[in-house]
Image (tube, rainbow, N blue to C red):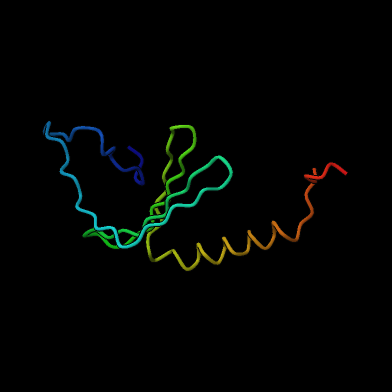
Length: 98
């Protein structure tokens, strides 16, 4: 195993016992519909700390990323910069087709 890899939560431990579930408290949650995608942003807390879980649902499939609360400020800053760049940089294929 590579030093930064983590064991899969779905794999049985070396002793044959499944890992116990981690108790998580939901602090705040919001759902956003953008085109055909649904995004669920959930601020949660467990014994290891707070984190933001971002789940993308499209066509019955779900993908999730988790951002520790210690990185939320930097994440929001970079996301804001990307939103501004998307508005300022002209697209190669305008929606109007001109």
